[in-house]
Amino acid sequence: MEFVKSDYKTLATELERQELESYGSCSLQIYAQLLAIYLLSNDLPNAKFLWKRIPKNLKQESPELRAIWEIGKKLWEKNIHAIYDLIDGYQWPAYLNNIMKELREVTFKRAINLISQSYSYISFDDFMNATGIRDKNEAINLGKSLNWDVDENFGFALPKKANFDNETISSNQEQLEKLTQYVAFLENY
Image (cartoon, rainbow, N blue to C red; front, side, top):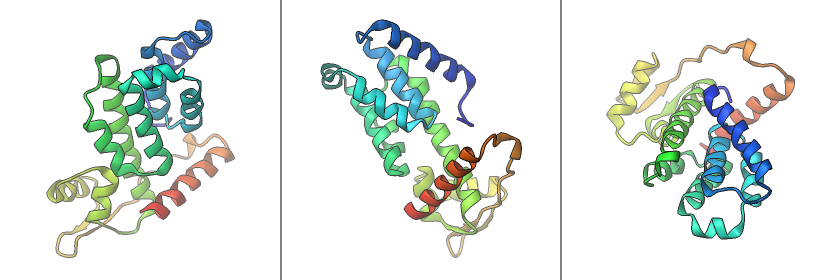
């Protein structure tokens, strides 16, 4: 959850408490917010288990829940480009709007971080696909703003390695998870 604000972590804890105390009769809003926050936190196993716990009638009646879960499935598949389209293409209700905007921003930051850690060079097309950027000039400007070497003639960028803060790693499990993310990212792009 390195990119997630602490107020969302607090909200997730409160929503989990409300779900436990409701004995299976949670509101749609609680389920939708909790599912979105799990995705925001990149906590895909808990998102999947929550999806299985949500009553079928709520899943069928709620286009918001189905839209959030479509994003969750794309996260599982590492189909990052589709995530941006799904988030941007839906009119989110007020109680989900900020979470979904944050999910888009966090997904973008994670993609930039993974690119900078995983690639020695990347084509503009791959970079645009991974970050959801549609305009080549915007991709070029972003690369330059990140102090990457950008070759506009050949259409690729040389990412600079992001500063890696060793203090953020607290266990071997987290290191293994990061390595797995890098490998999965490289295999999918």
